[in-house]
Length: 224
Ligand code: DX5
Ligand code: ZN
Image 1: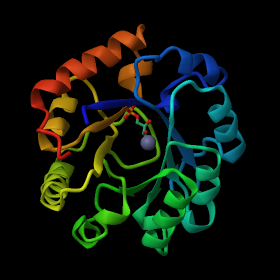
Image 2: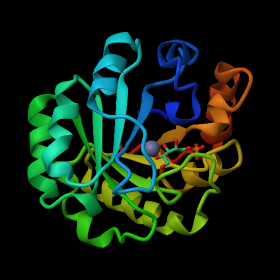
Image 3: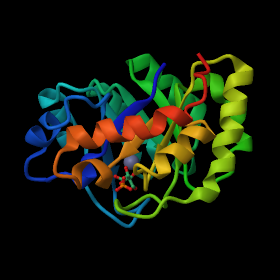
């Protein structure tokens, strides 16, 4: 698959999500950040909002759950019809069982790792997942600086995905802009979340095109 750009509505106007999603028709999906004020020190919205976004969005929803007790809550988000549901490894008691439930409901199953979480224990679980999200900032807030020291983890994942022959997407989230997207692409990412660098610009469509153009020369040959 080619590179995918998923703008984050965390950086959009919270009073006008329907209109804000309509401003990014060239995006591949909408990234939806659910925060519970426990797993992260910030609060956004929950299930009723995601259900409603699903109804009004022409784009698939890429739901990123920054919540505790993912085992209990993540399946409800898959039930909304979300294209992809990401839960954090640090917040799930049984990641494999949860991934299987998400897939059975019909969503892509995605595992997120905070910057300091090591990747090695999860490499053997790759067949259970459709995507791994390497956080490139501490989760909780938009507009933070890209943590380049997370890149070795991404390289390790790209190597493992390639060796496995599986079609597991590698997503990065946090501090992605026209400069850092090249670094992440070169390190093996193929799905890019971008909040401020899309919604913080006057023309989000132009911003998406600029991100694609900046990533493409650095992209690895896709693993599948
Ligand atoms: C951070 C969120 C991100 C956030 C990224 O916890 O998971 O999705 O929206 O925002 P930027 O692109 O501004 O760093
Ligand atoms: Zn996110």
